Length: 450
Image (cartoon, one colour):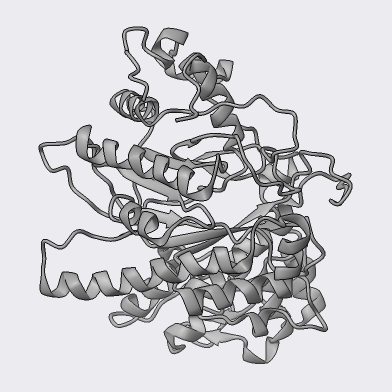
């Protein structure tokens, strides 16, 4: 194997954890699995704790690349074959050691493993499979594992890996085929969508097998996800959200992640963003994505070709409500669950609580506050027993002016200048966890190279 054996493991960890920071892993594990008593770890659906990366992304796992060597020349990628960066590659045993040691110390709750493409897609996918196989079968690691599938890898390798991983993902990278052709000529929609379809079909078949044979191994139980880069190409929000909606409907994806473009290469084919990564745009896309998945909205209700981008001053739900004041005010004690979901300030959990609570009593505004409704947004759109909370006007300008005065329309981290990347190697992180160099990579730990 063409794997580096002379570089210190801590040095590889520094390079390959930093190289992985542009992969989005902001997700709960999405799968419950109790400890077997024979292995180490367990996986709880909401159990992955989150930290935030430099660009607003969540870092919840040991997030590393297998290698940052790559034969592809994607213009937006820091690790493409033409960039002058330090290269490193783990061995499967090294990743097993890091994962087990960090898990034992309660630093992590799972593994997120992505990779550049070394030698060929099949060669890299085989190494990833070997890594996950050793973690599961030799080290008996029972925690959460999210693996990136390599575009162009053999379907047999993807299937074998899928029986060991909790979640698999393959990055769509860019919203349209033209943009992909322009910025990532070594990739194609076919090499991305084909494995995506394979994973979807195998998940469906596996669910049917599990209904007949309870002991059947589970295939990608937490589902699959993908990631799109936002701002590197000229697609508008309407095009991006239409692609996301199509992926949810046709491939039953669990999540679509949106990654604000960071021009790390200074490539002349890429736009210069003097204001930095489009974090607020990324935030609005995530908000709209939640509306698709949990609030029964369709993209055509939020955007159109004549109005292709989200309002940066208001969240998409408030913006929709202001353009449809004919549906309001909504009577809390009578409205259907679907109607409640459309009210700004009422989340899907709050809507469920309202429907349950009003079976016993007529609800008041005090009750709504206890339920968790954000009244400073909802008060313009609801009545309780026919009365509004205050004497307000149901006028677009009046409500818009008051909603824009709510600072929570823009997240504090974006208002105050962006997120801070956390790293195992930050001084503050070391202080918080009382880490020393020896504790990050135990000196007694012997790494067995292949």
